[in-house]
Length: 235
Image 1 (tube, rainbow, N blue to C red):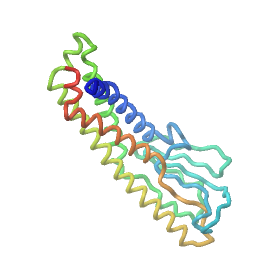
Image 2: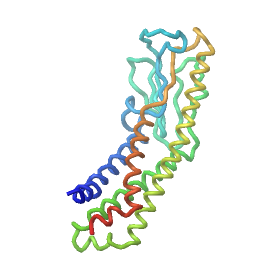
Image 3: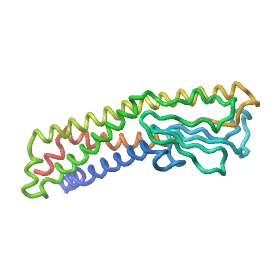
Image 4: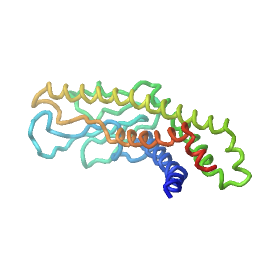
């Protein structure tokens, strides 16, 4: 019975984890310019009086901006609609909604190669997902499954998974450090202005949480692929 549970987990649950990881990565990459305009972002700048009036809990109205790897969405106040920049691997962030004393110069796009490498990682991830799933279910494909029996095909699948994982994770870490420093510099500049500073605060967005979860899930099929557990389980 334990063997059946182990086999079922490897065959059916692991591809689901890979699909979940792929979707989370894709959503975090496309947001906020393409989808989830105000729900998901790598970095957000929103109205807050915490930095200019420590201890204050009053609601503040003001401009907001949501930054992602492909561009940004912004609005001049809480009631206004969002205006999103065109998606690009060399994004331009619209900071025109901020006042002149806002340290918007520290909000800049990450290194140009990072979004490109993430896109490459997503392509490899899709290929790995298709190959990994086909290898796992090859015993249900009849004669067509013979292609996925070949050791070379299984090794190629594993290497594609490794490349996708390392390229994506490395690029994300670079972007995380980039936006982390930008948020710190932005907040420190506002604090330095005291009560005369703009009532704004920069925070790391929830897109990074989605990405860390995605790569935690991604690691499982990669390890399974390397160990050939999914190959042995279907024999």
